[in-house]
Length: 87
Image (cartoon, rainbow, N blue to C red; front, side, top):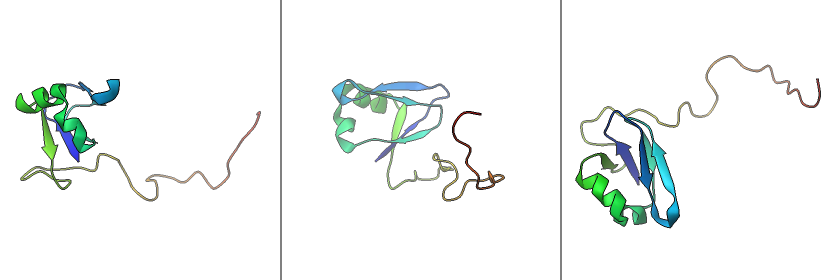
């Protein structure tokens, strides 16, 4: 289950168990369904500050991949040599 921040400002969403979710403007994050029953989350849903994203996409929305590139990293390769220790 995912939620999306519909505002243009970052949000701090209180979750059950004393935890909180920091969600950037127009970003999507995964949460457990149990968290939707938490009163502060319900208030944000009712105020239309956040929305529940069903099936990974919302109807008619232009969605982007919030996790960035998948698989191989984009850009130049590090050359396969890993430098460790003191230099």
